[in-house]
Image: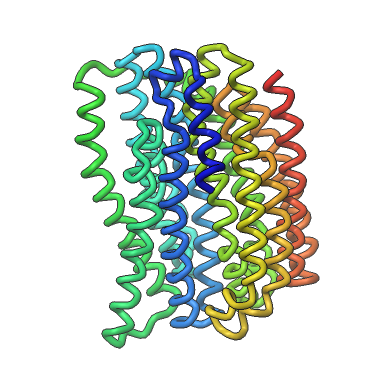
Length: 431
């Protein structure tokens, strides 16, 4: 993995003057991001095992369904500002526009809390009477939205630990500690208890992230006037939000289809299988976050040749390690799933199917992030709208009929469609 990341790190040195002003340590950021996500994967994996064993397949399935809904709705609450931060912060720093930089960062940190609170309140009113587990997920919405938005800001300033640590390390550690503490005290845990622990963990993680981020921003952005460009930002973030929602629907509708049409225990078993493959996707995540604002800098500088080379190497640096991790994880799949409980081993074929789709998708590397950084966000949004439609049709056709294997097949086929569509659009955008 270090060699793959090194490809990006070495190539970063070739970025022209504008790119150098943002910093050329792409490989370093990717390595940090990957290291944090690997550690987070271990924590998340441990958390999922503990939850599955403490509450059983059925309650675990209820939690999985609620978390999946939260993951989709948060794309609305965060308003695409987590991704847009990596574009606008890079742009304003290259241009030396301190007033616009201060204005954007302030908007990116405040708006997701306000929107998340409003959307979450509506969600609670609509669900609390019949699904208290889902209602708690909506209560969690503004905290998660704020975490994601501040993560995007921190990434833009090359602060990987501050960006990723609160969400991917601190949150699961706190949630796991609360759950284990409750169990040690003899508190009977159900799906509602688990969601409450996750809610408290998200609130505490946000408080710590904010307490560290605020003084750091003050050092790199001295106090001064703020200038806001809402029309410009809206023109950029609108398709990003649409694309983010489409992407989340495409990657989550398989779980929703199972939750709505099959027994809850099947949802829990399938969720464990898919989550166990997270390491395959971490490579793409690390590379995408390392290159995003550097791609933006190269785009602003107008160096198309360097940009195309940079993107190609990022794709290679994503695909090869992803393939290796997929082979290892599938090979150990039955052992991994057995840690959740004997019933979970039955999901191994589904795990292998999803892994195949993930490898195909890894071949296009950080295509989605690149498109959003170079002004092709509308084309990217169209891809994800189409992908969401394909995913929904496949999931609600295959999952009700074939259960876990049907959901896995739907997700894998969706990944193949997404990869092909992104490759076509990216090639056209980089000409």
